[in-house]
Length: 259
Length: 267
Image 1 (cartoon, rainbow over the protein chains, first blue to last red):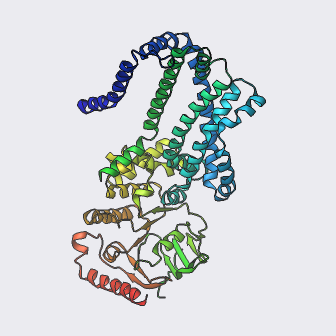
Image 2 (image 1 turned 135 degrees about the vertical axis):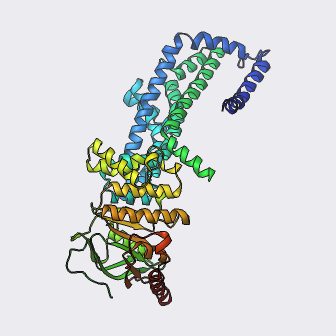
Image 3 (image 1 turned 90 degrees about the vertical axis):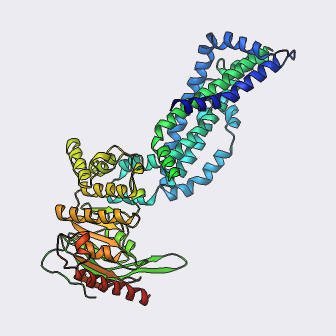
């Protein structure tokens, strides 16, 4: 049991370690102003990001992201359920949804700054407005694809209304909803950074822009590295959530593959 | 039409000149022509017919999942317009009629929960139902961890726990192997005699129909009518070893088989 797990861990860590070593060695003698040695970037990283800036920049970014993302999850599922369930509603809503989805959320940042100002509300809105689309559209698809036999089972056993939603529709659609949530999370991170670059006094995006403007290039790179780790950590957390929420689904898929 | 109409007791299920036409822009298919029969309370009725005989359409009309074009279905005298509360249905596709995100116990429990049965009572009913289908140890498993035969037993346990007056089964054993099938047939006979249910069992298997039923209705190809109504007076209790070699079994089997062949020929 332990040996395959170790082997798996080794395979997963081998490439990142190799890339890191390669970059470290190749950049070691770099004199290029824009591409400083990795060792310099790492020194800056520990000085900046393992210090006060973790609380003054990373935490505010995380708070904005979570607020916008959770808003997108709740609104996306809440709107996706009725649209997926009702054919008439779907027909009416689909062209509109396709249109709004086609607008890059970044394009509305200037407008939102005018309407909402530079504060957190604007950034949370931008994140939510961008992350909602994959969640909403995947919820619609997931709800549309529920099994008709299971639907008839619910009807014969008088499982209706909210109980039907909770015990049948939502779990049925959950694998697809979670696909949408995963996409929404990456979009949310991108929008968090962009909205902070536009207008913010703190946050990861604003820090990177600040270092760039003051020509503190190793510091800027350390911000990019921090952002990478930030996204990686969130995607790990999301993977844990998915494993927990879809344990039944992965178990069932695994069983089907074996037979 | 030679359905024997019993006037003395209220029928558990009455199918009254049922007709079902599927209509789309391109074509019009008359699945059920004119079905008229009654099922007495406590009877075990098997319905056989060639494939494409509208058996599933009939079942859906019985279960209130499909509205008839003409005619009506009555359960305990009341016309069926929605799935009746006193009826439980076991579907052919057992794998798709159980909730894969719920354990076996939760699957059996859900309809009771929605009916508002108190938790302690519910737990007792679920345990009894799982016991009745010999799945007492599998309550915490997920359906997809079980074999096909076991999954269908979970669906049967759910129907049993629901405490219906009428149980309707749509070719429930079509997708399991022969040995499992024989076991499941005996399980149905045992449940039927223990619980005093009215059973309506749809199948395409003639032997199964004769072995299980007190009465076998032979359906024609669509548009469906009742071709033959056979009373099965084989001795009870029935056993796989003895009943199937009983001389009357062969005679009855031949009669039902003849009916099916006639139905196919007429098609």
